[in-house]
Figure 1 (cartoon, rainbow, N blue to C red):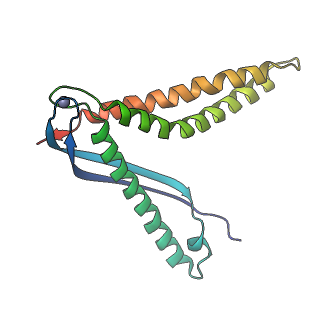
Figure 2 (cartoon, helix red, strand yellow; figure 1 turned 60 degrees about the horizontal axis):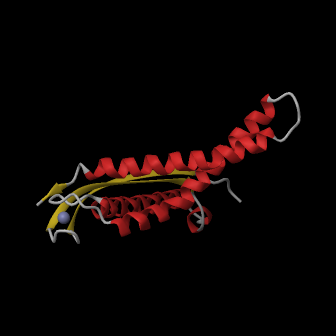
Length: 165
Ligand SMILES: [Zn+2]
C-alpha cells in the first residue's frame, strides 16, 4: 500500500434560498455565502489508481466536490437558522435538530481534549493515582460544550451576513 496523501480543499458559494417564517408569515428570499472545508488523506479508488497523477487529480476533484457540498449545506443551514428579518423569531425545531447533528462531532473533539488533559496530568503528577482519569473525564463535557458554543456563535454571526430580498 502506498502512504496516504494529505489533501485540503475549501469552497465558497453564494446562494439564494426561500425563507418563510412560521411565527409571523413573512416570506422572502435570503442571499447567503456558504463556506465549506474538507481535510483528509486520499483514500479508496483514487489512492489505488494505476496513474498517480490522474489519481491525485481525481482525489483533488473529489475533495473539492465535498467542500462544495459542505459550503451549500452551510449556506442552507445559515438561512434556516437565521432569525426572521421581520419578527426576529427563530425556528426552535430546526435549531434543536441542528444542535443534535453537531453533538457527535463536539463530543468526539471533547473526548480528544479530555484525553490530552488526562495524559498531560498523568505525566505531570509525581504520584500514581486516579486524578488524571478524573481530570480527563471532567474536561470532556467542558470541551464538548465549548466546541458546541463556538459553532452556535459562528452560526449566529453568519446570520447577520444575510441579505434579504
Ligand atoms: Zn417572522
